[in-house]
Amino acid sequence: HSQHSWLYSMLNAHSKKPQAAKYKVVMSVIIFANLLFFTLSTIPEYHERYRKFFYFEEGLCSTIFLIDYITRLCVITQCHRYADPTWGRINWALSTNAIIDLVSFLPFYAELLIGKQTLPNLTFLRILRVFRILKTYFFSEAMGVAYRVLYFNKEILIVAFGICIVLMFFTSVVLYYLHPPKDTVSDGSDFDSLPNTMYL
Image (cartoon, rainbow, N blue to C red):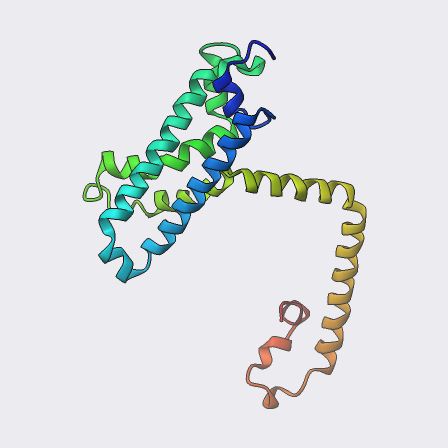
């Protein structure tokens, strides 16, 4: 790994170098702050009062994410998996992590380039902002822990899930046959069938 540059080591999600750890924390703080401001911007009184600030903050964060994406695209060929200068970058751009990186800044620049007046139905692009949380170091660590828990305890979890299904079915059968008369409950359709009772 001696051929890897300092910049590649910093951006590599699996790197244990000090600069990589610091970069993950800084980017996570930026993302959480961005999501916080995005949440606050949906409050009508805040949106009207701080409209310019929210727009500036969104533009700043989107620019940071864009620079991050371009930089990753430039140094990704240092990874043996994406070593080819052309196809390596194309393959990386089509990977899950790269797509998440792309949608982290796409909404802002799509609205900026296309214009809200030209295409008013860009709500689906704003929804993509939520995917920024997938870029955070804390989320990736949490997903790693969750995967290990599921992997090493899959047999226990499968048994527990099976017990829950059996208990739910047993309880539904009891409620189906012992439910109160329809004229004594507001909605007797809740007990008309086993599926309805199970849903209840």
